[in-house]
Length: 136
Image (cartoon, rainbow, N blue to C red; front, side):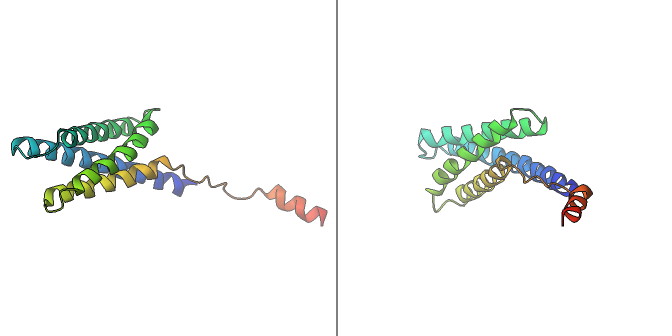
């Protein structure tokens, strides 16, 4: 049981880091598109900023062990693939490819946090074995 708990803690740490990375990259891409006066759709820039904000909030809620954290990484697992898909439309732009990859990594990490770990029941109580021996 202890191993499951340690794995879950490590998974959570990785998810927090992936959320922070996604926040940073999406924020940078929105700034880049604005600064370069790229012909980006306003919806794409808005999606980048929304994704960045949600990733930051998810990381914050997980780091504080909030009772609401599941709602945030669930939402993060939903928005990140959308953002990645939008970034992939810019096939020739390497920075957009990095953004898409970062968003996909974050989405997968958050999806894993949504999945509840299997509960390890621990060792079988001796009385069960004793009962089985006495009835046979």
